[in-house]
Image 1 (tube, rainbow over the protein chains, first blue to last red):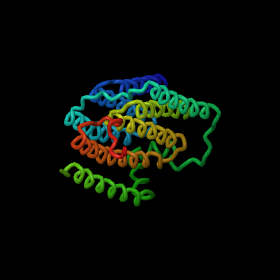
Image 2: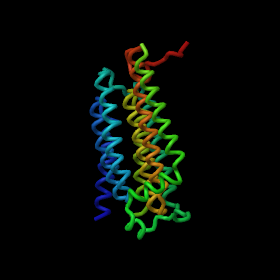
Image 3: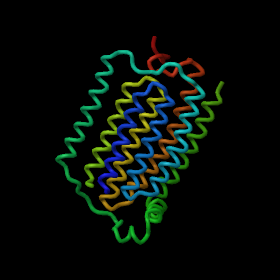
Image 4: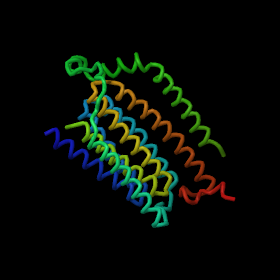
Length: 166
Length: 99
C-alpha cells in the first residue's frame, strides 16, 4: 500500500513538473506547479513530516504561488519564452540528463551510514511530529530561526523599495 | 520503501527544474523552476531526516522555505521593475551591459 501511494505521488510530481516547464502560458505553468507542490506535500506526509507537509501547502501553494500568479497577471507578458537556438535546447536537456543519471548511478552503489539521532519510533509515537519539531527548532536552532526572521524582514523591505521606485 | 527511492525521485525533480532553468527564457517560469529545484532538495532533507531518525532535516526544510519565500518576493519585485523599464521579461532580451 505504502509503495503504491509513493509511486502514484512520484508519478504525479514528475509528470506535473514536466508539464510545468513545457507549457507556453505562465499561468498554466503556475497551475501545474501547484499540483507538483501538493504531490510533494503528500511525499512529506509519507516521510513522517506532517508539520512540514502542512507548511508546504500553506506557504508554497498558498503564498508563493499566489504571488507568482499575481505577477503573471499583472505583467501579462506576450513572449512564451522558450530559447530560440535549437542547439542550446539540446545542450540544456543533455546536461540535465547527464547530471540526473550520475546521481542515480551513485545512489545505486551507495549506502547511508551515520549516527542515528534521538528520534526513536517510540518517542515519535509518544510526542508526535509537531512537538519534536518545536523542541528541535527552539533549542538547537534558535539562533538560525531568529536570523531567518531578519532575512524575511529584509526581503520585505527590499521588495517594497524595488517595487515602489519610479 | 528505501531511502534510495526518495533520493531518486528528488534527483529526477531536480533535473526537471534544471532543464526548465536552462531551456526557458521567460524569467517568471525560470523562477518557478528554481522553486522546483528547492522542493527537490526539501524531499532529500525529509528523507534523510526520517531514515537517520533525526529532526534537523525537517528544521532545515523550514529554513529553505523561508529563503524561498524571500527569494520569490525580491525576485518578483525585480521582474516587475525590469518590466517597467524594458517592457520585456525575456532573459535573452535583457542586455543592459552589452557594449
